[in-house]
Length: 492
RNA sequence: GUGGAUUUAGCUCAGCUGGCUAGAGCACGAGGUUGUGGUCCUCGGGGUCGCGGGUUCGAGUCCCGUAAUCCACCCCA
Image (cartoon, rainbow, N blue to C red):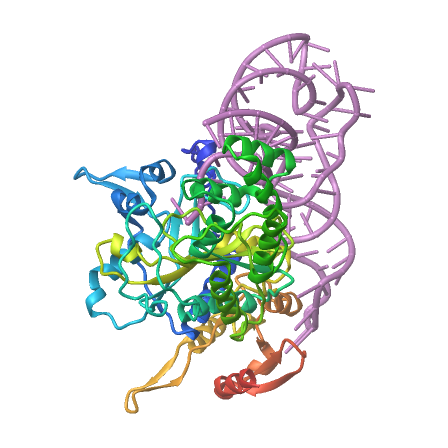
């Protein structure tokens, strides 16, 4: 063969920045993760959907604003349309729900496993192309809040919400169930929750003027990540008064605790300072406590195997979350977020649909896989194994080739319209050697449960040897009886 | 987009302050005992030392640039 000069530059020999090649091992790991996601979703009664990999650029501006564009891979098609590779699935979901909302049975319980794209600077756990499991529970309202209209612009929507909420619980349950199925438990992850309205009410009541709420949320999001000096800098930047700074410092010392304990601490501090609760719209410490505790009890006493902690630092940037939010983080790592989501009651409406309440969450494959590898929780053997490995020690290769194809074929009974015998996963060696020892070694490495040995002495009597690779036992079988013998051996 | 660290074979790495044809283990491939398993032995394919310049008689080693990776920012849907 003539040699050809390479036509590609060195830089073209690597996958583009922030993307991955999936060789068989990596592909098997990805499939394993996706299979768990899919299996658990279906078990919990969710149906799978998907949409286009790219959408109109404007679709992503609806909820995230213009600044999102710099973080998207966007392009213009030949008709001059602005398009973008999907950075997330929620806008597509909202579009799909809005388009058929009238005809869909409620609640709508959908999940998806889309490939998503973000033009970010890649880091550990953050790539430019990744898979993201999305689970959404749409149409199940908080009690007596279903048809609510959003409150006037400027003030967050206030509704007579009730913590007795199934959608929140189901989303959390399916998420935790998947993590459990991956072999993770409370030593590996921590569930934290917060509530937009609840937190707003507390902040306003205790120490934050309403016009400084946005700044307060921003601070809460970051307090945990900074040391003392970093926090002081933040307070200065945000123009915090001494009293605000004092409260934030107090709040920053968060650990695992219940909502009521957290609230109690704040109220005690207020009491010591002789400060008064700033009452607005009839919100009192007691009413807040009652709501928070009710939600907390609902989440923690509904059979979830893991405790849920109140965590006011979970803000989740998105403007579209309207109530409960949650985040599951890695306990041992640097609090990497494994999954996160919450309630977004106005989003479907933003995309032109009816007012439909919804709860959903996302979980990416990148952080999850790193976590599973760290904890050695990926199954040892991920590559698919054949059922049978044919070891050919005959001079001729034709009989083995014939046997391989025969065993691989399934058999369909036309008259009874049913499968009589399923095809088997069969491999044989592509090497030239007839050394049975080496071939058996290859058979064992393939992960096959059985080996069929074709060798002259037996072959001359129409016999083959059927070997169980696990316990190394073997027996002679007539060629004609082989399929039945294999199926019998596999069944045990 | 900004700053820091790193880059030698497919993987993990060695290569002292510049000096023979750049190495090991694992992995991969071929073979050895005329028919039974992760062993052993032999042999082999593989590296423009990330890439490009510079200094030097001489650069894997020193200097500059650049790319990629990781980390910290920004951002986090």
